[in-house]
Structures are given as C-alpha cells and as structure tokens.
Length: 220
Image (cartoon, rainbow, N blue to C red; front, top):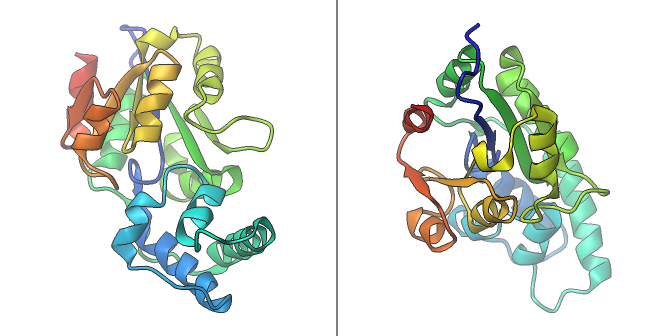
C-alpha cells in the first residue's frame, strides 16, 4: 500500500453521498405513517426531509401540529420498520466502491460521519464496504451533537492525526457544507446526491464534483 504523502484525509457523509437510500427510507417512512393514519408522501419529497437524522426526518414528514409524544412513537416505530424491511433499493452510487478502494490504496485516511443513527450507519458501511476497512465510521450518537456541529468531524480528524484544514468533508446537503465550515475543513459537494449543486454552493462548497472519480483530482 502506498503511503499518504500529501498528509490529507477525507470524510464522507453516507446517505446521498456514498449510498442511494432515498427510496427505501421513503417506503419505510410511508409504511409507518400509514400505520398511524397519517398522510404519506411521494418518494421525491423525502429529498428535503433528510440530512438531520432520524428525528429530523420524522418531524419533517409528519403534520406540523404533531405532539412530541406522537413524534416519539412514530420515530421508534420507524426505527423498527427500517431495521426489519428488505432494503433491495439501497446501494452505493456508481463508482463509489472504486473511489474508496483507490483512496485506501493511496494510503489516504477515509472516514464516514452521518446523522443516520450509529447502528444503521455501521450496518450499511459493513454491508457495502467491509472489505475496504474504512478508518473511522460514525453515525448519530446520543452523547455527540449531530452535524452540522463540528465535534464529530473534529474527533475523526484527531484520530487521523491530520489538521482539519487538510481534510476534505464530502456531502450532498447544506448540513454537510455547514459541518465542513464549522470544523474548518474543505467543503466538497456532490452533484449526484439528494439536493443539488445550488444548495451546496450557497452553503459554502469549495468544490463541486460531478462523479466520484472527480474526488481523486482533489488529491493531485
């Protein structure tokens, strides 16, 4: 394995960046909403419901006047359904596995930081990328503020032993770009994600990439 001679590292968001999970999240959420006799939504609407974690998702797809108690009930049911349902539609975006493989072969430290609950984050990274042995994988944890708070990203940087300003933070939403800014990392927005380049640029993306392979050019 080649050494990481440029002393840079990279941290990825998960949903909408490494994996396309939109359809399965939407289908599971709609199952739960119907169970509670609440209105469901078109799959595409969920693009704007995601990015802030499971609670953020459930609050966004429920009626605005929902009580905290009802939100909590729907959230807990969603976690069960999402864990048990078949996720045949969730898969890495084209070129992602090859990108991660090449980054690892170059000796570049690779992390994942998601607002998806930690259990589910680890589950999907294990399912799709276990052979690559990514350096750090973290989802949302009770004891750690979620993105865009910088602490999660900063902890990964510390584990890498690399200064934050030398780390690319790659994501598909305003949450990710603000995380990069708050952690003083280099914000990289992906065009293939759930939101789109306009939102990414508006929230401080320093680079916009059209394909996973474009990310390799950042290290040249």
